[in-house]
Length: 147
Length: 99
Image (cartoon, rainbow over all chains, first blue to last red; front, side, top):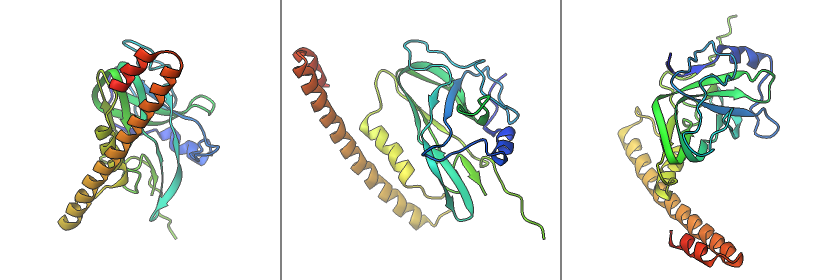
């Protein structure tokens, strides 16, 4: 009953072939990042957003259900690898703890999942800023790559 | 003819970083570090001379970005100070100016 690594959801790979997701900055799908406690049990078999074990605010109202919408970065290519990225996601005036996150497509029917993110440990902000920093958007590290 | 399968997935050492602060927001120095990380990265397997050059360049970028972020904060506070003063809250405006 805990986060157990980062996963690209298998259903997402299939849905890419079904044109269910659009990562263009202009006119693309809305991708959200939702935060979870360590009781969440996500794997590559996770198929959709759930409110089960989603975090709540210890104080204040920085976090609300379904988290925050991510800012898309237009897909590009590096060599023979296609990739896309998101701008870092921030919650300000935050007082909460999270162990991991789920990125999902909030504009597609059923809120299909994209990626499971494991923070490696509980991360806490108290009356501060909570920021999820995505890896360098290159052919080796970008969050979503097709090589 | 066999066409190689596409590789769609996360890299072996994939990880996101989480940065948090307590009792305050991030300061220009902390944000400048993150900004430079997005601008410049160098492989651990690159030639040592190239790694050293990239790191030196990154240090300069951090200082430059930090300076302009601090300028942005100062200028925004001036705008907020004026808005609060114009709205009849000089004491609150003074608090903002002293931050």
